[in-house]
Image (tube, rainbow, N blue to C red; front, side):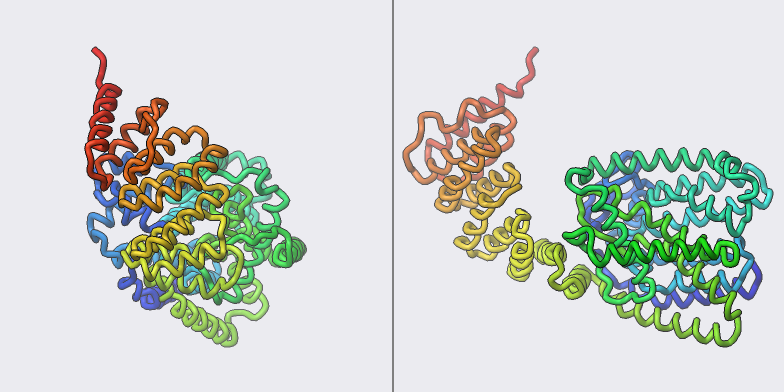
Length: 580
C-alpha cells in the first residue's frame, strides 16, 4: 500500500474515532446485552474452565465462541463498566476500516477507490448499529477475520503457495466462530476471481476445486446455525410462512437496505416484518433487483466492478433475508449490512471515478458527502446512549406500524427491572393494546399494577390471560400461584374459577396441579373442602417443587396447613429417598 493511501486511511480512522468517542459514556441496553453479558452468570464469572466450555458448546442462538470468550475477557478488565465494552467494539471497527481499504487496494491497485470505499464504510450511519451495540461485537469481530481471509486469499493468488490458502481458511473459520454470516465467503471469493483477479480463464472447475475446504466449512456452519436456531427460538415452518411470502419479505428487505444506503435517516433498531408479504415494498424490491442485475450484466465488460459490487451486496445479505427464519418477526436490521454495503460503494465509486476521475470536483463532492454522513451518524449515535433513548427512538420512528408493540414492551421491561413499575405500566398497556394476543404484555401490565399497589386492576388483567389464546398453561398456573404466595386469596379464588375451564380444554395434564392450588385457596378462605386437598394423582415433581414451597409461604395460620405441609414433606422424602 503506497504511503499517501496509508496516511489517508489513518486520517479516516482518526475522524471515526473522534466521531464515536462519546460511546465511552454509554450504557448497556436491555436487548441481548443482558442475555450475553449483564445477566449471564457464566460470562460474569470471567475466565474459567466452565466459561471456555460454555463458549464452545452453547449454540443458542448460534455457535459464537470467540465473542463469548472476549466478553469474559472484558469482564475481567472492565467489570460491568459499559464504556470499556463499547471501546472494544470501536477498536474493531477502526481496524476494519484499515482492512477494508487495504483489501480493496490490493485487489484493484486503485488507491482512490480504496480510500472512498473505506471512508464510506467508516462513516456511513448504517454502520453505527454494529459498532455501538455491545452485543454486536460478533459482527465487527467476524468482519475483522473475514477481511484477513480475503487478504491471505489474495496472497495465495499472487503465488505465495498453499500456506497462504490455509491461512485464509483459518481466518474464515475464526470469522464463522464469531458469527456464521460469513458462510458466503466462498461465493465472494469466486466473485473476486472474476474481477479484479481475472482468474475465470482457469475454468470454474479449477476455481471451485481449490475452494472445496471453504465450501465444506460453509456447509458445516450452515447446518450448525440452523440447528442452533431450532433449539433457541424454533424455525418458522413453511406451513406458517410460505416460500413465496419469504421471497416477498426478502425483496422488501433488499429494497430497504438499498434505499437506506442513499437516505440513512429515521433508522430504528427494530424493523418489524409487515403483515402482508407482497406489497409496494416487495414489488419495488423485485424491480430494483432485476433492473440493476440486468444493468450490471450488460456492463460486465466495460465496468466489471458494477457486477462484482452488486453481487457482493446481495451475497452478504443472502443469509439474513429471512429465507430461513426463527421466531423474531423482523424484516431487516441495519447491523446486518455492516460489510454488504461495501459492495454498493465499490460499484458506485468505481463508476464515478471512471467517469469523472480523481480531480477537484470528485474530492469536493466526496468531502461534502462524508461530512453529511458524519452529521447524520452523530445525530443517531445518541439514540444508543441507553435503553430509554434506544426504544424511545424506535417508538418515534415506527409510529403506528404493525409490530411496533415490541419497543413499547422493551421500554416497559427496562423500567420494570429498575423497579419503576408506575413508569413501566403505560408502556406495557400500550404494547398490550397494539398486540392483545401476546400474553406476556398482559402479564407484565398486571405485574406492574400489582407492584404499584393497585390489586383490583392487577387481577382484572391477570384474568384476561385466561381469555387469551396461545397462553401457556404453566403461565396461567404461575399467576395464580404468585397471588397465593402474596396472600391475595379472594382474587385468586375468582381467577381459578375462570381458569379451570381453559385448563380442562387445553391443558388437561395440568388439571391435578390446578385442583391442588384451588383447594389450598379454599383452605385459606375457610370454604367447604373435599376430603383430599392434594390430589393423589399429582406427580412428585409438582408436589415437591411447586406445592411444598407454596405451603411454606402461604400466609395462613392454622393446624390444617401445617398438617398438610408435614404430610407433603413426608411424601417428598419417600419419593426421593434412595433405595438400597
